[in-house]
Each structure stands twice: as structure tokens, then as C-alpha cells.
Image (cartoon, rainbow, N blue to C red):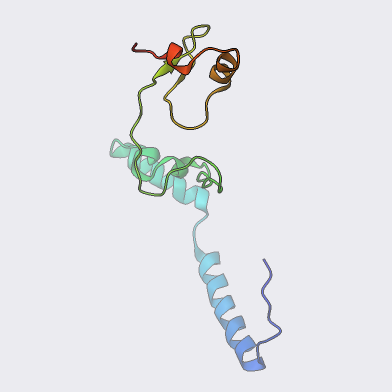
Length: 125
């Protein structure tokens, strides 16, 4: 992390240094994070909970999942998308299905390129 300090005056730098030292002493006085996590886990267990139940999966020592980048299929925060039942099934592999939304799967594209119709693969005919 780099901060551009070239535009600050001597007075502003002094204030910044004092503020940084105060923050440093506050951070140094805190208990180590592993110790706090262990205390929280012990208290949660005594109450019949897990850290995952109380704080989500990120609380169990795992890093929070990164948000999806642009172009990925991710919903907006807070937006819940309903599950859609599959409409099409691969006759060669019944585990492969398609809802009819989004890009056509490769198995279906291959069949349609051979002259078959998409309607031939409907689950409920």
C-alpha cells in the first residue's frame, strides 16, 4: 500500500504521524485474532451454536468468497433467483439437462447441428 505524501505540509504530516501512532498502539493492544476466534468458538459451542451458524462460513477461518467479476453469471446483491426446472434432457446422458435459458449446452448444439430439432429433447412432450 502506498500513500502519496508529497502534497502534505509539515503540519499535516505531523498530524498524520500522531494519528498513525495512536492507531498503532490500539492495534498492538488487541488480543491476537486466533485467541479471540477460539474464545468465540468456545462460547458459541457452550450455547449450542457453531461460528458458521452465527457469522457465516467466513467466520470459520476461511476467507470470504470473492465477488464475481463482470461477465460472470452472478446475481445482484440481495436478489434471489428462483430455480428453474429443466426443459430439455440429453438422451445419451440423462444427467445432462438444460432449462432453456442462457447459452445452449454443447450436447444439444451437437445434436441440432446434425439436423435434429430442439423440441425433440423436451422432457415433457
